[in-house]
Image 1 (tube, rainbow, N blue to C red):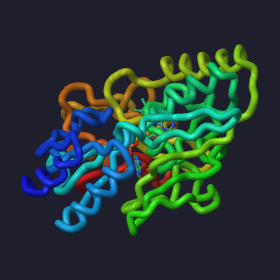
Image 2: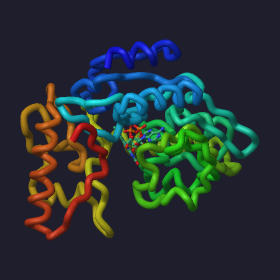
Image 3: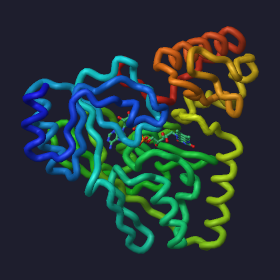
Length: 297
Ligand SMILES: Cc1cc2nc3c(=O)[nH]c(=O)nc-3n(C[C@H](O)[C@H](O)[C@H](O)COP(=O)(O)OP(=O)(O)OC[C@H]3O[C@@H](n4cnc5c(N)ncnc54)[C@H](O)[C@@H]3O)c2cc1C
């Protein structure tokens, strides 16, 4: 691995061995990745991926790490994050093209300042644009997919392709984008809006989050809402709110959040996940599907 790291480091500034992934996840949980690197543009990304493939090293693209649980043993392969040019965005009239590493909330804030409507739901969602497309992130009845005009995605052959929204399989917290594809940029269609009204809406959305979501490290909603119900309501009704395993707890603010109270391990979180799934199944006959992604499992 050291040899491959040295080759990659010839063209890429940030390359590290045994990088703790707890530093890169909102849960603050996760063992080390054998190799960690940050690609600053498409050329560097293609170079790194070619190198990893040549040496048969598996890789995983991480966004802002806000919807993921990484195993305590980490990941035997390379974790790639996008940086540099992938953090740039450009508004042209009512269109915005954003690199995959742009924080979604930053884009939403800028759109609001420009009086552009569409991204109000995203105020306070902590992920990146790339992660938000893969997860079709959303809130308050809206999701990113509604705004997508096209996406630039590096495909299996390491060529950049433009995808139309109908090709992305976007539905509730879901897309058909997956390894080895890498989202590089997304173009969104916004609409004209009233700046003061947009400001009020995003302030309300942030206040709602502050009151309804826990402050301790977490990964957002653990489970998807089943049809016509809410995972949080079911977990609470099953009597599980506030339950603890090791350093992890089912939040007593919102039962669909598991929080890292004190040096929780991924195993603590997984034990709670299994317990929730079993109890909700036994009591209500409903199978809760994970919303968070797992890495290293
Ligand atoms: C406090 C809190 C509140 C949240 N609230 C919401 C909410 O209201 N609504 C909501 O939908 N989500 C919410 N989330 C979850 C999360 O923020 C979103 O799902 C977000 O879109 C994930 O983006 P990310 O960059 O963190 O992705 P990551 O967690 O890093 O990755 C998620 C998946 O996307 C893949 N991925 C990421 N970037 C790329 C890329 N460039 N190319 C290919 N694959 C990629 C990863 O491989 C992984 O499979 C919340 C999370 C937290 C911690």
